Image (cartoon, rainbow, N blue to C red):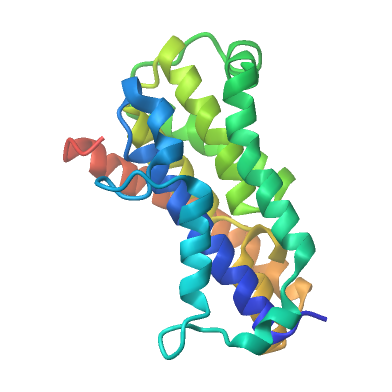
Length: 226
């Protein structure tokens, strides 16, 4: 079974990866997308591998860290391999043209100009892919490049950063199973609840996530944030 230390490591690592990836994509101008893989902060040119190493190292620091040296024995190598592969999907998709091909063949040629259609479209795609893949991180690195490629061709009515934000709101809030959210998976060991409890909460939480999409994104659009 997953120990509390291992659960903390998985949850912390996936959360850090997800937030870092969102920063990389949302914080980059459309014309400078090549730079987002090299961006840690707006004023630091550190690659994603170095940024990840820094975030993980901070988790092991004395006093401020959440893990100690003994936690190395519980490091899930399989999870590390999975995260490495997941982070590669977006780069491989862009380098090979896969993201553009999916956007051209699997998505509609155009969308209605109203913001509600855009929110529903992005939310539906995000929900479907997240349900199939499971991981927030893996879903993000798959769907973000596709949405950006689609927006360049057909137009989404929002900026690249807006499309990423709408998608991230969906995949970060929605779940049906524990595998869909790392904090829930790690909490199962500590709190003692099971998969049935997660499933009972998953459906209503997904409905609330959809309502959140309309309200929050609509407000951001009216406030001219998107």
